[in-house]
Amino acid sequence: MNNCVPTLQDLQNLGADVETVAKFANDPAGEPNVNRAGNDVGNLETLREEALEIASDAANLQTYISYDSPSARRMVDDTSQPPGTQGDVTDDTDPAKNGRYTWDGSAWIKNPQQPIRDSDVADIRENANLALVTAYSREPNARALLENATDEAIDVVVNPLGYPVDGATAIKLLNDKITGGQVGTTSVVRFRKVTANGASIYQKGIGGDNWIEYPFLRQQNGATSQGEFSDLWRIVEAYETDPLFGRLRLGPIINQGEWECAIREPSPSGGVTISDAVGGYHGNEYQDESWFMIDGIRVPTTWTGDVRCGKLEFVQRSTIFRYGGAVTPIAEHIKHYTFEANRIRLLQRLDWLISNTLTYAMFPMMPMRRLLLGETGDQITDTAFRHPSFVLEDVATAGFSQIFSQNSKYIELWGETSGISVRMDFHTLTINGRPLWGVPDGDPGSNENARLYIANPTEYNKIYMDFGRDCPVAPGDVWESDVTYTINTTN
Image 1 (cartoon, rainbow, N blue to C red):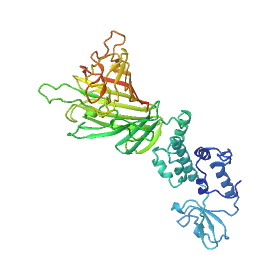
Image 2 (tube, helix red, strand yellow):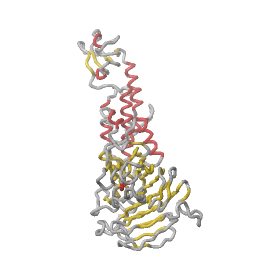
Image 3 (cartoon, rainbow, N blue to C red):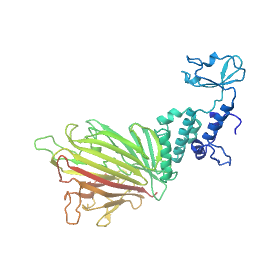
């Protein structure tokens, strides 16, 4: 048995081996805990039991309800003890006065080293588990968190490192990472959110050292800018970065255009001229609710931090309005992004509120660059092919001959020398539960006018799924889309 009561400082000086600290925080009494130096450092429960045994063996340990605040037993009223007597204050109205004291013959002096309390054990356990989770997420703050366990206990619960969780949830998160095989090397997404309305999401490329950065921003525009009448979150461009997340090239490899939804209605006879689509980048869409999920833990969009994770999700519910402002709602829009290893999955749903026959409705898209700077710069993409034709398509220069297809399950687009590529897999495309494309062959599907193509202007090689071309809609109609983007750099 140890020959003195352990102190919080003793515990905080354990060192930087987070796995040893996690065992120290969580193992039952008597369980060995050998660190990398070969020393058995024990654990909290063992030390606490020993401390309680020492306390119970102290023949003259006195216990008081308060130090000097009104109570049935105040420490300051007891001046009859022999010098050296130890005394505990357990419930003073001033919490700072609780703790272990020594009577020096004339006054009670609070001991500079205090024994472990249940609340201290809880604080350290919370911090040890969160530090281990953080270390497995490759964060640099793990040791600092441990060393400040007591002082930072409240801050940890409030969220200093991006996991706004209590100790129990931190333990669950840790266990989920271990059992799910996500420890260490599979933290494949970096989520860096430095402001309430802006973030960058990074994914590692396959076959090289570089990453791809997706700026993910809240678009809030009035009536005089691109994307007018909007409040929503969306991906804005994409950049290739080096392993230290520094942007490469002279501009984005994906331009700022829309990924999700762009709806164009015809102009009504004698009504306001409709001169653009609505939704996302095009505006006339307002979010109702949105949030992020970091490895299954929900965080609000106001959260800020910088974490690594195995899976990052974003969910938004919004209302899309007719062109010209937030006057006539035309559809309710739900989107759910999932960022994992080298893949982005986008699930969407539109619940229609109006009757009309649309001019078009892109649902979804991919605004990949052809040339880095639009008309000049690196050749980012120049070749494509798609299911079911499997014919190489030359898309290297603006104005190329376009191919319009149906029944396509996927399309791929890449640069022969850039190392940049994108693939879109279309898993679900339905109107009121019925497939968009003909199933079986010969069935026109739910919209025989739908088509897939790559646009050929100077700005980009943008992939369009024209889901709603010349398509009638009515209140209660439901459109659903489930697509996976595989965007890669082999550099």
